Length: 137
Image 1 (cartoon, rainbow, N blue to C red):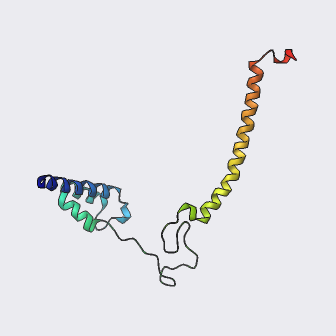
Image 2 (cartoon, helix red, strand yellow):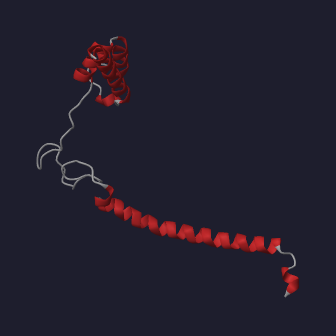
Image 3 (cartoon, rainbow, N blue to C red):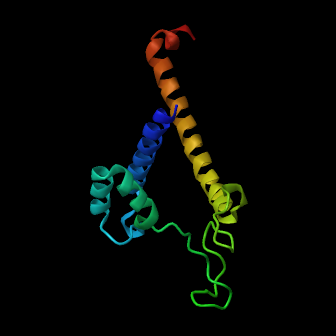
């Protein structure tokens, strides 16, 4: 059991660090270019993985500026964000809900147009399918 753990845990760490390194945006990589970090993680699996996790990526989430402090804005929170900087759920975002209402009118108009087009096509096909329709009267 111990032998399995000594093999599986470093392998899992290496795979996780490698994928994390590949998917991290370039602007969040610290100290070295991203390509160099990928090479280090690949060539030195255990040491490179630990180095990447410790020193390779910015891990802290930037906190919003305090009211009146540096970086504070006069405007309200950013679109789709709470005052503390966390994202809003779509059903809590008034701007998102308003955009849905604006799109409802466009969708209704489009559906009416499609229905009218479908009725016209059905009438055309009925006229072609039944050539004796005009003679029965």
